[in-house]
Length: 345
Image (tube, rainbow, N blue to C red):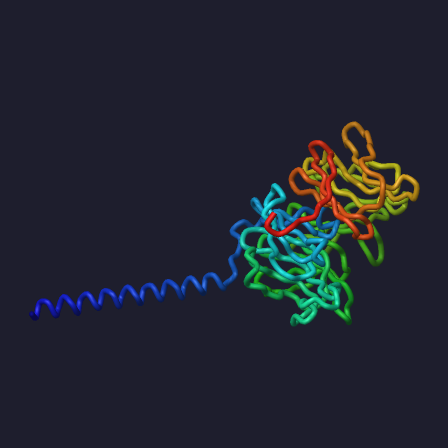
């Protein structure tokens, strides 16, 4: 009898110990899940500079494309790389999307939402935000208007607006800590090889560079440029002194090449730099064009006025200039179709 009681007590102790261990494990998991998951690779990035030049409305992470749905007030959505399995992630007016690992970073502009939108009643209508890829764990990193942002490692480089100081360039940790001003000038950052490139916006429009850790900037190339991006060892930009023609600066040789002889409004570049897609904006030949950078051959793909050119894998996404319709082009055959994502597709 005593042996049976002792076995019973032992069994109860074992069960109690297992319950305690399970509770400790569950609590530890919840704490881990609620904490920030830092990237092991300090070179982690969240979008291409050419997509960010166009507003950062599409970004890819793994096998998922995150995008601002033009038919749902630019709310944050996701879909797979075959453009199917569309899901709504969050009801924010979204731009400058960066996605990597567990997180999506973006700029919120709910002040652009319709008057009947519930998003207008959120605790802040603007700012810089981080959210889990499953749409949970929303975290505000900055609460006033922000613009272009770049993820690099465990930091966000972004343009922030302050009522007293105006637009400036800042760096903040992905945990929302150590918000540091890098540049009083409100430049849009283009990051490559731990260097921030930007075109001046105040005293000049030269191409400058600055270390990602801060310090003093220096001039890379003198001129009157805007619309900067980086692709495959070269900087691309529009030359305002030459009617906004597209240029390419080879950083290894410092050779500047004019790629177009016609005024453009925006552009995007393939990852290897072999092909450029751009919007001609001269008032008579307006349309979507493609340029083979090796042969110099330029071809009109579709006449009209378009905006927000984004390249994801083998697709080019773009919109009518007035926002009335969105399109997707298969880059392998240049076939253009309406882009109208529907949940559950």
